[in-house]
Image (cartoon, rainbow, N blue to C red; front, side):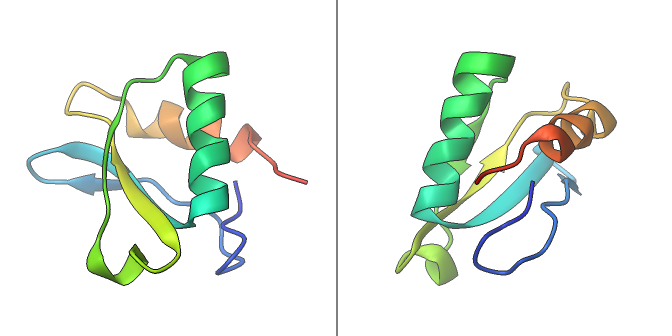
Length: 82
């Protein structure tokens, strides 16, 4: 998946306490990602909105300590928005 605002590939990071997470910069990308994670992959997540993303509606998505960051990255790499 490519973040439309930054033009960068979305990379899975690992938070020490909360496990794998990603950052999405805009509302449009975030909404489309949620639809795909919910309807196609059934991936569980929770989200927060960092201050720097408030204006454009971006979010951070956390997947929990049991989530596999390699598999999650593979899923994200399959996602392409037109």
